[in-house]
Length: 267
Image 1 (tube, rainbow, N blue to C red):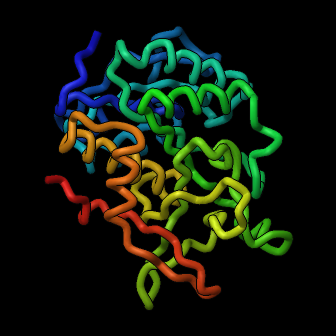
Image 2: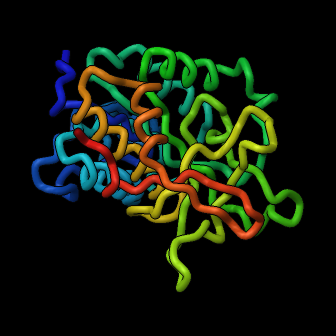
């Protein structure tokens, strides 16, 4: 068992794998699991680069965090079977204590645009994510990058799995001449719709960009907060991150919570 200490909080990265030699020096990458359908069970090499970019962004914010790669995508970046995501979360639940998992970064999304998770309640994935959260482990997700394709039908919505309300869903900001604003492609769902689901945070994305990179930033912030407050987890860390947010008001007068890694209150 890996003892969870302030210097060894583990972030599980569910993605295309992780190449340890491409991360900041000193980053600890634990032996992970390969569910991509290619290679052996322990082969978490990243042929696409997406998962490595996610891990690098997390490590850049929280250098002491350990990275646990769970490889889901094949070498083309495709997820062949969604049931592998359920298998990954079942494995995380069973091995959370062994690896000292403090948060999960699932920075991928489909092309859907939902305002509620009603049809997903009671699914295996929802139950696994809810069980992790109940045990103090937050799952950070990407809100999705398909806003231009959907906004004509609905100005609010998020992709799957970010729409599952037990996740911590993250949208992307973009720099403009007037300052940071909601990224044109980023999906978003405001709490005022009262569907029980909403975009939890927005952030300027790290690599690999867009809502995936924004989710990685928020996962890194949770790791940094956990290192500063090792006796806290889950909801308490979420409260700390919310408390440090500033509000961004969009052109429709809606306020969105913005995470700034440099403004974290780390004691």
